Figure 1 (tube, rainbow, N blue to C red):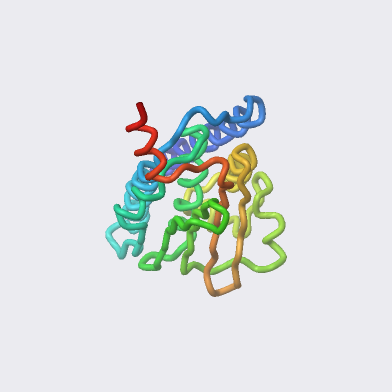
Figure 2 (tube, rainbow, N blue to C red; figure 1 turned 90 degrees about the horizontal axis):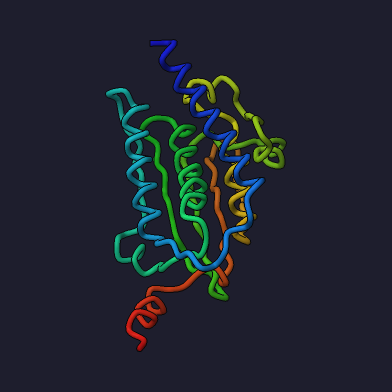
Length: 207
């Protein structure tokens, strides 16, 4: 069993390294491919719930809240790489599951910002992050708690991937946390990368 778990962890590590390599060596995502926000959120939710169940091992799973279906549908679409965007958002949600104790709460939001941008955020009730770590947590392999990362299967590359994907889409990764009071990780997307559901409907009915 130990060999199997370590093999799976090594596989995740290799996959994350390959993802970073592709991000650094490929052209920036264009604006011709549109990705459904609703579908991105649905996939993240399915994966987070499955991960929470696996980590609970018969105990209490996390209380995970995502936007309602109507709100997710109204969010519209993002221009960019579907694979990259899913990787970034899923990393943030899965990190919250990994580092929040069983039975804790995780809230995922998608909020329209003034000026037409949007903010994807993940807030957890975990242990929080001390101020001295905040400036370094997006560095490759940097760990706030090494033993906790090993226990939950983290590779130490997730936030580096999120930061790269955000930059490639003109977005900004932000972190707010107080030790002992949880953390909020958010990605703020520019208006130029977004189109609302109304705009999509109008485009579909245009002659």
